[in-house]
Image 1 (cartoon, rainbow, N blue to C red):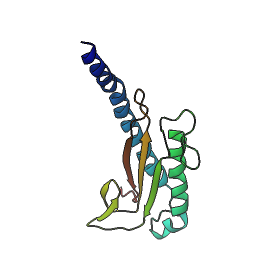
Image 2 (image 1 turned 120 degrees about the vertical axis):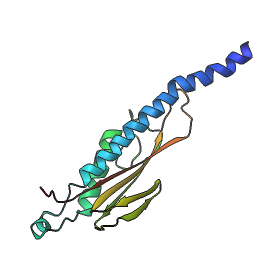
Image 3 (image 1 turned 60 degrees about the horizontal axis):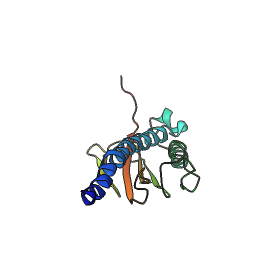
Length: 155
């Protein structure tokens, strides 16, 4: 009975504590990545709008997306976790600005898969090394992709 308990208790602890933590963090990190893309796509070049051109400013969009992720996930400027962050190591964040328009769609490849883009867009790929609550040495990485596209409002 002691042998069974020595095997079952860690499994139950992982299932009850860490698995639910990873599921929660996956949902939270997806929302953060989506928010970063949505915030970055608003960084359009205002001087081109009167000409009917929507073009995203790559530098400003990248800065905004990175800042949203750093603030929400508690990361330093080098993407290493701050003291109270849920990450165990540096996060990987890639921000792509695509100023291409296509009626048939454009396949844009990210490390986590391909996304279809039709309008000028910001694609944010992030890989978060999440720290477990019970098993702190578990090597769990959560990858998320956020995509946001901009277009004129035609009422």
